[in-house]
Amino acid sequence: MVKKLNCLVSAGPTREWIDPVRFISNPSSGKMGYALAKEAMRRGYEVNLVSGPVNLKAIDGLFITQVETAEEMRHAMLEKFEQADLILMCAAVSDHRPVVRSKHKTKKTEFPQSIEMIANEDILAELGSKKEKFQTLVGFAAETENGEENAKKKLKKKNLDWIALNEISKKMIGFNSDFNEITLFSSHGKTIKLGFLNKEKLANRMFEVILE
Ligand code: CTP
Image (cartoon, rainbow, N blue to C red):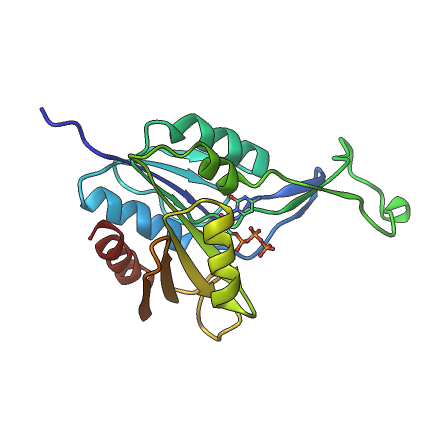
């Protein structure tokens, strides 16, 4: 029997807890990551999906590793990374977490004026530093300004093969929308605009381009 290729996908936001009732997060819905995981399954990959908290239906036949914090996502990704031929880092990882995670709910009268934060590990950069020749590593860049320039910087800095630029300031696209507009940049200098499409069609086009 031919061994199936393995695809590792991350999706959704992470939550960085302040206390048991409050967290710092972002509006990522997970829709793009789930669409990519489904497309990978449709194409015959063995798929591992690592997902932050989302309100999406489970995917038939797919075991999803559920995580909450960036640190949990990092562990799950590192555990599954070595066996992955294709890695699609679509999650919107929180860059920072509160230094202190209080065990008890902070009373409003005691809530601090400011919260001290510490940087989370950059998961994608860590995967990029461990990447082997057989692996294809794809990241996303969520940008509100200087999209192309910033995306290309991330492509290089994180040692990626492709980066998908997502201009989140445009109306109707990106976070929580069913649609998105993506431009792909490769480490070999290719630029491919995928246009304004629903996330299922975009996932399909992304695979076409990346696997070409
Ligand atoms: N990413 C990651 N770990 C982090 C932050 C980001 O793995 N701690 C990944 C995201 O999943 C995405 C890529 O890095 O694939 C780019 O994320 P983005 O939020 O666009 O950029 P940052 O690297 O966080 O940089 P900045 O916030 O300065 O734009």
